[in-house]
Length: 307
Image (tube, rainbow, N blue to C red; front, side, top):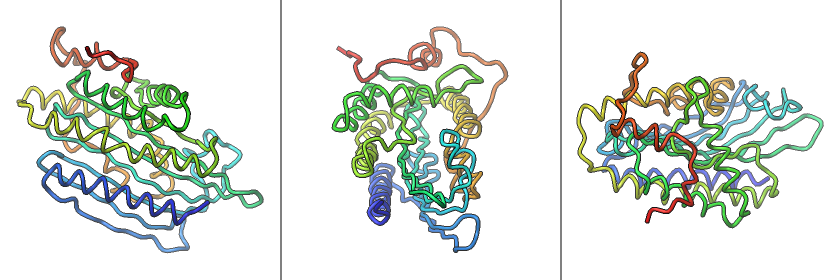
């Protein structure tokens, strides 16, 4: 387990993404470096990079963290109950970008490495991550592009991985209480070490490296699309689904809160403007209704024929 190499990669990935996003937005991200001294429930350090009220991004955060804890929280052991109570070390990069223009989709990406450290056994190491797209107004070419880049990032590591991780993403980013997907998906994996440490880490790096290629062309294509109050109201309504998922189901959010992480950094994924409406539904035949009928359902986007 090469902790130094993993840390260097994650820090470099954060810097590359923030630099590209700041250049696209035209405003810089603020930098908030933090550390927790040894001796507490959680120790370690990290860097929060955040932009608010930007030209493109109404709110966007890209966090790096590297922490050690005395006992794994419940959210990290639901699939590995034998590790309950073990010490742990975790690091990774997590981001959420909430654009101002409703025609530019929200995006989430995360890549991480986790090591459980049982007292009388060898460390158990796994990787997790992925990326997913949450549009407010759907465009087939955007969804196809995003999914094809995800597929390309996994191709060198096994032909079956994309289909497997795509379905995992569809299942994971699903609001059970609403019976609807959060967005058009992407890829998601967790508790992954079946390729061995080196190869599994290479796969995780490939996913992280693919993010800018997957998202930036979509943001550039849609950023100047005209919009008005109607579109902003629908965007705020759909952002409510994002909040519901992150606070009820998201394992990363739950892990951060349960382990005593920094609340401001954990909740940087929350959108800046959001609302809820009682029993609201879009009028049939509208662009808002098309999001539900055409996009918020499983589709094999990477193999869609747009001709």
